[in-house]
Amino acid sequence: MAGLKSGGDNFRMTDKKRFTSSRKLDHLRICAENDVESGDPGFKDIRFVHNALPECDMSTINLTASFLNHRFSSPLFISAMTGGHPGTKEVNVRLARAAERFGIGMGIGSQRAALENPSLEETFRAVRDEAPHAYLIANLGAVQLRDHGIEWAERAVEMIGANAIAIHLNFLQEAIQPEGDHNACGCLAAIGELCSGFRTPVIVKETGCGISALTARQCWGAGVSAIDIGGWGGTSWSAVESVRAGESRKIQDKNLKTLGESFIEWGIPTVVSLAEVLASGGPVIASGGVRTGLDIAKGLALGANLCGMALPLLKPAMESDEALDRTIEVIHRELVAAMFLTGSSSVAGLKKTRMYITGRTRQMIEKDNPARLQR
Image (cartoon, rainbow, N blue to C red; front, side, top):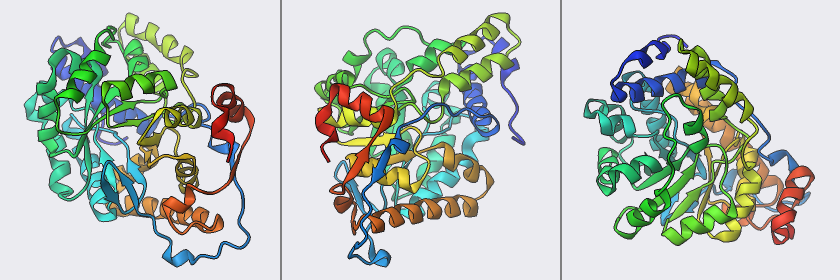
């Protein structure tokens, strides 16, 4: 990707703050330039029952959706992608402008770099500047929450005037990163402490491995307001970190390349994770391998409140506002068509449609939660 150079050489530095910022640029570049998608999220195993007499007007279909007492113009959610390096600012700004124009929500990338180095805050603050009315979700890692407490969560929210904060879980990624955090002890307690004394809604977010029913129940018990499942079947952070490790000049980092490749198949497919989490409570954002408006329709019909996309929006966001707008418009047309062909004039109506769940996805859901198949 033009203008974005590998931060591999930077890892000879001893300044961990610079490591964090450089890593953010590496992630953006690798996602844009490499094939880092892996697996099947399960959407192909879902088939809507066609309504040959839909009895609704396609031109008046209402895409309005609700999440955490906020009304959105569409259930499409811009999932967290980037931030924390000057080279990522323009991408964040374009995504923010789209969120404002389309009346949709947006999550920002991990704010750790800016919390470690306040000079990088502008790469995040610019999001609120460009989207004064959008629903924005701040982002902090569970390990950073545990280590730095509520103060860092408050700073993350203040930085962008956030409507909610996502505490992300990315322990597969941490296990493979050369500089990853390998101690996950105390994170659940830290989330519970945050929820008990925080006025801003707290969302727990996975980053590509999905959330099980057990983990979801632990999160609800800790007091979280919502869960973003981040299921397996889309961008593989195991693959991203494998590429990054392979670019390093350090022998010990190159050994992690094989580790990343070994765990590309690790995780709970998105549709399976969605079924498990919904059986335990809600509200829920379905993300992980959501690639089309039809995928969004399927996620909503299963019970999700919003459906998050990241990678499909990244390349157009790196190109121009116009390219990003065109991509979002195509996604919306696909969603509207799916709603029309099921006779659903609203998102609420879509949740009542019939569907068939087949294949491996059905087998996995049926094993632990057969009630989810009775549609």
